[in-house]
Image (cartoon, rainbow, N blue to C red; front, side):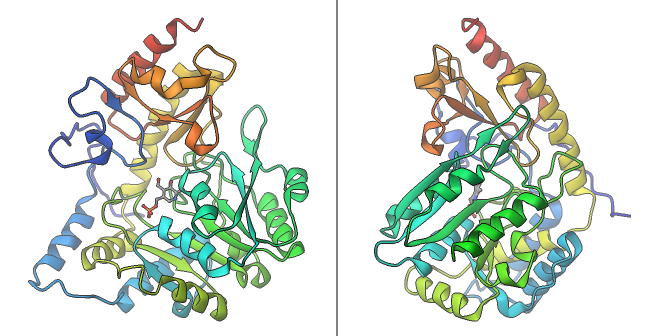
Length: 382
Ligand SMILES: Cc1ncc(COP(=O)(O)O)c(C=O)c1O
């Protein structure tokens, strides 16, 4: 049984004067922030203690990822996803966003293109421009309950020179967790078209749908593993995104070499404090995560009661994707909510104009205030 951990997710913690990106955006205005993906919950004590312990040593020099960090991550992967990975496959980096940009930089060739299902976490959409590749955006399709990959559209989108498929699973912003069948189809698609695959799995631990299972796509077969970059970080589930520490799992030695070459001169080492925090997170076997998920499920349920059909159920992440197309506010949905005191992410940068993204990882009482404002904002929409 998991060791107990007592968190108080109801506690309102004042984040003003901490230069919080989430809260500073609307400083001095009566707008409550439910936008960027960080949570208004304390990082668990065992993470803070690991950082404090590191600070007991007074020198914070350049630091290599210690073997204990590799082992913590390897055990986490084995425990959660039964995927056995040797330590040589691991490259530690200061963030997942650098990771997917590096993967693209590693495999880009003149005249190449990158295929990206949309809507998606907007830094994905900037990647092709950063590495002078053409962007092939393929819309996900919505059925009543979820967003799915449109395989026919994928096949139609591919062009000679397409190099890379960029996957986000669990998916931000739609909250989808792809099934094993879909992942096998995706892996087959990458093999059929000789594509590299970069899979951002940063939200893998935040599964709200108890019947959903996260499967690392590269664990499906050695054939897909050898063309893939898989990215993980504990920063979402443990709420430490200000201490970036992520890991790229790259089974193929040559690809790994291309990736580390792409880092050269651009990417700093991971901070020792971030590594201490990440190790404590990967080693965590307390009830913290189960309790967090139970709380987030409660928030999700409340949000669904108010939002109804405009959102699909969120299988993973703490982000809801809400549709205001075919309404009077479709062209400026984010603005409309801001004018009612609610700071949501507008869908346009995600390639989802007419949508807003609602981050519901906050104390319930704060969510209730947000929902009151939400209801006032949509009252005139009829
Ligand atoms: C899908 C996804 N990838 C990456 C990130 C950010 O990763 P990092 O802060 O490690 O660069 C986020 C943050 O919201 C995200 O949702």
